[in-house]
Length: 96
Image (cartoon, rainbow, N blue to C red; front, side, top):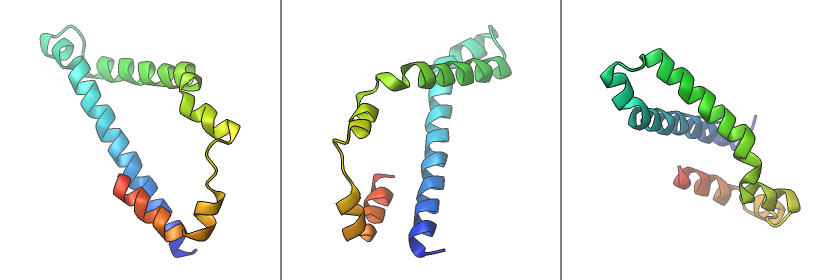
């Protein structure tokens, strides 16, 4: 296992951690009033959020044009990855 896979794994874990925190913040913003007023419980709010996020990703995921750009080959990263992989890793970490 090379250093590139280790760095990629660490960056992936950090990205997943950040995505979970952003999702938790969005859930708190959207459901805080409902939970506070007693209209729904915390478990119901989490279930609604998971359901809504999953349906949104599945149903509307194809409507995001960035994924279509990658499918059509508008973004070609082969030269970037093969020439300077360490710069790619640094840029991934800086984005996080």
